[in-house]
Image (cartoon, rainbow, N blue to C red; front, side, top):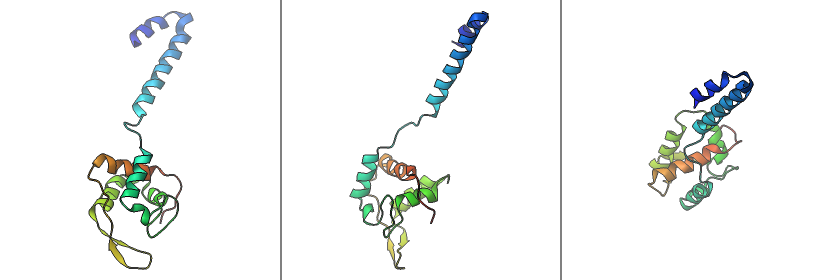
Length: 133
């Protein structure tokens, strides 16, 4: 395709058209390469959080016993190992400290499906706003 366009560019009248087509192709290629492999299924993420009891202690935009999901996103935004840290947190049952000072085992997510867990985490990390705590 590029060789064909180069042949066309030898003709002065088609030079502008060729340049435009090349730039358009480059834009399309860059767009395709930068597209995510999969998109977030928000409904499935919210349902998994609800089914797993996460919403008892967490909400999207307000602190309950646990931080708001937006605050979690703000805390981990730009952190290279954010996904791994959150996977560990929601699957290991590690101890968490509550506002009143007592500690409990964090509830484990009610799925073993890695794709569902990653979808939940991607949804949380995609939330804008929030503050670091």
